[in-house]
Image (tube, rainbow, N blue to C red):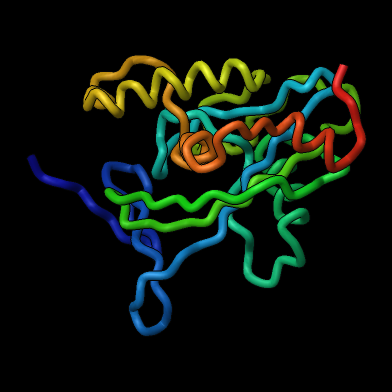
Length: 199
């Protein structure tokens, strides 16, 4: 089987899908990147998740987010920008919650993922799919539903059957949120910081 790899600028593609290349500095040393993931809540404590497409983690469910850009003023500004670019939704009351250490072994990528939370402004309608090359769909979910996904995905990994796993997979930073922060609940953390209460 031959591989059809095309390089355009600093990006590489295999059969039309962007490949994730190791992040390196000017001397070629692999570096750790900073990611941002946002729990964008509605009044009921539900939040937005999307099914990733194209890059590392394809097919896995993740929060809106991405990389902090060079000279971007804050993690909060990054979270607001990513939410707007990906879903068309505006958020307010953005707060930092926690961070995970995420090593994507197969992709040779290493990130620290900063988890933030915010309230979706306005009528809290369904998020729009604005980056169709990066996401299959967006939906509202609950922390309880994500916990169920985690338990099933984690059990498949522990049994060595994740390649055959047909359930809903979670993106590595979400898996690590459970593994590295046992007992963490983003709703309770956000309520504690802001004083807001979900219905």
